[in-house]
Amino acid sequence: MSKRVLADNIKWLIGSTLILFLLGCSSESSRKDRIEVDASEITSQELAKEGVQTARQIFYSLPSPLETAMILKRSGAQYNEELLNPVDNASKYTTNKSMALNLGIYSTDLSYASLFDQTQASIKYMAVSKRMAEGLGILNAIDNTIVQRLEENVNNREAIMDIISESLLNTSSILEEDDRVAIGSVILVGGWIEGLYIATSLVDDVKQADNELVDRIIDQKLSLSTVVNLLEQHKDNSDVNEVLGDIKALAAVYEKIQISFSGVEAVEQEGQTTVLRSKNVVSVNPTVFNELRKKVASIRSKYTM
Amino acid sequence: MRSLAFILVFTGVVVFSSNNANAQCKNFAKRVCRLELSPFIHDGNYNAAILTEGEDAELFKTFYAGQEYRIAVCGSESLPKVEFKVMDVERRVLFTNASKDYVPFWDFKVEATQQLIIMVKVQNNPGGSNPDMLASGCVAIMFGLKAN
Image 1: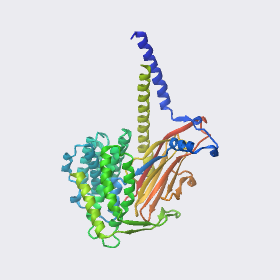
Image 2: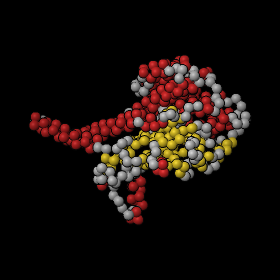
Image 3: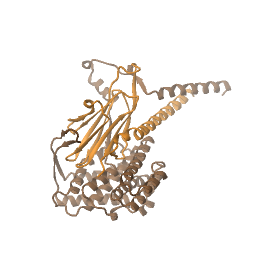
Image 4: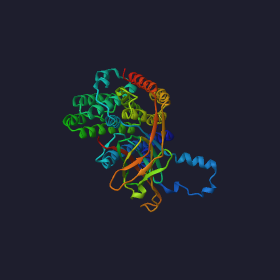
């Protein structure tokens, strides 16, 4: 190739890079791209095309490890460290799938321990969460500053919750930025299963009336559809697909639990928080509850082995 | 040769601008929208997307009985007003910020656990600074939890 041809190609490359860069950086798109038409003139084929062009973005949001722990505490759960996944298990997790699941599991354990003011356990579980995050290549999600701030605020529960929230946000946003949303969904499912495992393990008597913990466990049937939809979005990923299989097996047990809903009404009162008034009626028998407890324990055991 | 170079450059630019937009969105959610949740504690989840004028997005989430929540929906400065609606699963509207001067957050609690749909829509702004162009930017949906 002659020097002149090479120089021409370099000039062209630089020119096209600049043009495309400017196009790519523009935060606006032409209004002329959108053609206004009389709705009556749109054929069904055009409607289908329009549907594709303006496909709505859908998000499925699972309860985070922090929310799961708060729900546990609010519903009267007690603290039991024996239920947590021992930090010594961390060395067994070497695949992306096992590290992601256990980052979620350890994050729920960390949140649960923190809400019950278990300072040493909190520090230990933050350290092991950091180790899992680093294993997944999310190096800055939980950095030394976060661990240090946690140690400095061991007696300030709200500050600790804020630090945990920040580390969770760092993890999910870095994964989104790196186009690794599938792994992010596995982390959330790990955390959700751990919350369900702790809750089901803490229930002594399912027959006891007004057992709020049992109510919250049954309520997870609603989150289950969100879990399935979230995983379905990324089922091309083999790790996600395997987890989806476990969740569908759990869904089969939840199908035996009936929940009926009344309509929701928003009641707004001056100077007070709006209340969404409604009533759920649930029906579960002890045999089904025990089946659910066993299924959750077997999935959790598979993930932490 | 030129075709190959064009494809390489184009791919590189698309990847770069997409990553750059995602990074800006992450910073916007962390540094701007998260502050709207105070004094509630952010749940730690990240839900944000780049939307253009007139576009909308939906989020499905279960809200638990007894827990008090704050929903914050924030749009970056480049965008016109962002409307958000909270709907039940039958898509009946329970709240819209359009009737509250587009306030960016809403506090509520549920008597019984409910799955709700949060729909966000970037309003059209035909009278914008450049009437020939559609603005686009980051929209974040974040959830705050009232401490026990």
